Length: 106
Image (tube, rainbow, N blue to C red; front, side, top):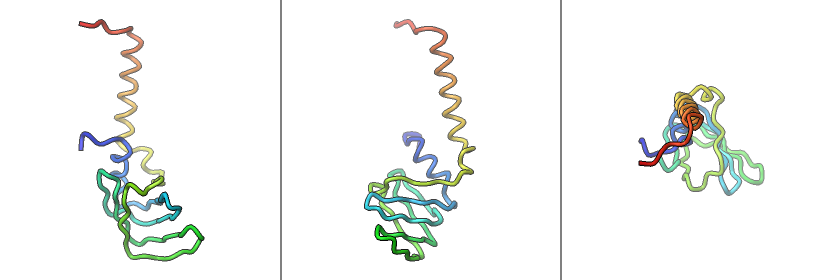
């Protein structure tokens, strides 16, 4: 799990929360995120699907392929997710290193 990026880690943090997923084909799915994978494949339950033409349907569960995802709207509570604190600390550390001057090559 250490080789995955920040967006995927954030997706894992959103498991068991309500998310909205827009697919590249224009369909949107809103439901409870049951599970996610490194490839952004995900399983949602209690889903409301909105087709491109606006038709709404309710589905018990759906499996979405990560390659077809355009974007994912996550809950606001994830603004305080631990992964963001790690990124902020890394950024601060890099800025401090840059202020101390260029590194000498060995």
